[in-house]
Length: 192
Image: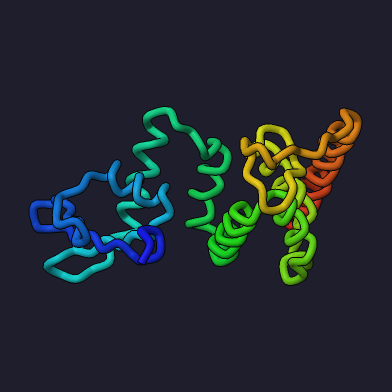
């Protein structure tokens, strides 16, 4: 069985120490983050209660990386996440984030194609603006190149981005601005 194919069980003792059941030794949060980066699925349970603590520890790992300056989440995204906990949008946000990261793993080109196929969300007010933001996010995540060939990894020899014309990039920005203005107008009408 390969290292990345099974779930790694970590037990938290009453002393809050984390125990790797696979290697029979104690691990740190950084070790757990490394396992995840290597492709392992990790589950952390409380030894005494049996509660699943995985989400709590994953959030703690993210918080520690963000506090060290490894900023992946822009402030506006964090703000929107906080707002989603107190708004009616919180039922849509988890599915949207899960789909976004699934598409990110599949590759930028595949993600854009999938965004165009998601009919259930396309009826949602502001979908076009959300789609434009998703495309802009993908460009930022891939170093400004939005069209990597499917199945390649940025930085590999096989990955050569398809070049975009400078005026196309300007058109994208203008499209995003106009879609954002339309969304703001719709929201203003809804607020009245």
